[in-house]
Length: 338
Ligand SMILES: NC(=O)c1ccc[n+]([C@@H]2O[C@H](COP(=O)([O-])OP(=O)(O)OC[C@H]3O[C@@H](n4cnc5c(N)ncnc54)[C@H](OP(=O)(O)O)[C@@H]3O)[C@@H](O)[C@H]2O)c1
Image 1 (cartoon, helix red, strand yellow):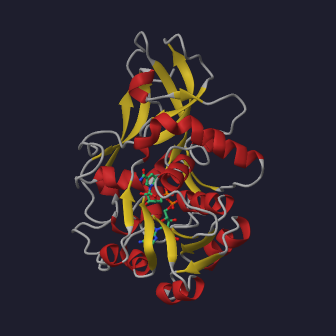
Image 2: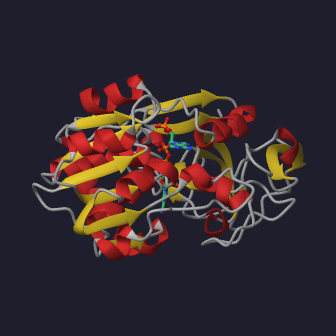
Image 3: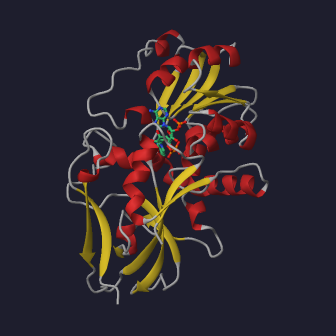
């Protein structure tokens, strides 16, 4: 008889990369299931860079995770017990489950929705995931509206959002240049995802490579990284270029405010449109994105690998690896819990 749920709680706010002492691992007692509640068994956790932001108390778009609170995270699960009329034992679901093996509560509190039978649960976190495919679709199509023939540059291109952005850019008729760390990632970006070129920022001068690959400049940038890569892009934007500011992962582990971008003045000189977005802004339009993404998957035009680590205790490692600058992932990083 199940009586506890393993959980990671935030013990202290990380000062730099996440340290094990910043978290507390505990077995929390599970109470009786109340009327209207469900009990879940977590199956996969989505490892998202934003979890590292939520662990800090910098100004952000949601309340930071409180000290002593379970680490907030999207994940998939199976219903193991239900006292709610809409959910039955065995249903596969996704939602805001947190780093715990057996989330329990009302469907509203856990923000759960069912995953259709036969659908691979990791697809609900990757191609169709809010922080993956949906972010790529809305952040590209709605924020910067790329046109056929335009040059699109996207960094963190071997990751889940960047890899999907570039492929959608190709579907929309753009010339797509990726930026990623290392030859293996660049080969994945060009050979498997079909980008026109990929710059290996660990081994190449990004500015010189952009000059060679985008001699007339960049029409559209989808920005995931920030730091020196973003500065090199800013210098090479065309007049009236558009930038979708999705993330600035290079600064998420920083304990002090990160200086830059140093070429901020290019926004003025080139009359750029720079727009930040958070995927929660587009919730009402998710059905449109899911239909589009599903169609492209069915046509074989969109792909995304899943990089899986195994075991609940690997969750902190997975987040540290993703944000820490030596990320191993091609595609979406997940942790298999059970
Ligand atoms: N605005 C939104 O609503 C929203 C939603 C989801 C995600 N995002 C943002 O989108 C970005 C990508 O997220 P994701 O989930 O798709 O992660 P991901 O790209 O799958 O993984 C993160 C990648 O970032 C790269 N990276 C890490 N540190 C770096 C550094 N210091 N410099 C350059 N690259 C670095 C790594 O690739 P390399 O090995 O190539 O460096 C890593 O694989 C993040 O900035 C995230 O915060 C925003």
